[in-house]
Amino acid sequence: MRLPFFAALFLCGSLGAAHALTLVNTDPEAHTVTVTENGVRSEVTIEPNARMATCEQGCFVTFPGGDMMVFKGAEEVVIEGGKARILKK
Image 1 (spheres, rainbow, N blue to C red):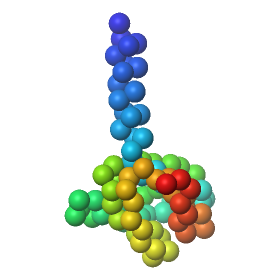
Image 2: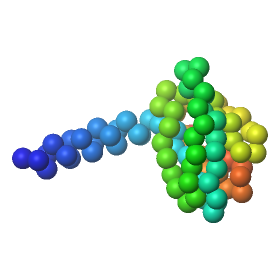
Image 3: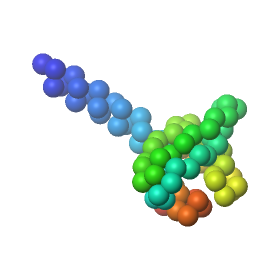
């Protein structure tokens, strides 16, 4: 009885992340980016060799190198050498 509940919970969580911006940090050090979503600005730290989802409804992101990019919320971006590069739109 519990298995279907947890499977449904996982599926719902996975579907929500499908429309989020995915940030991938391939560097050996953590990087902090500034995410502005719906007028709310927050600092987000991405650990070394980690990936995280953020910004489901579109946002502005300022990366460590000072680059600012606009996202709709379904892209995948890699941080490599402190610079951002879009992998998937």
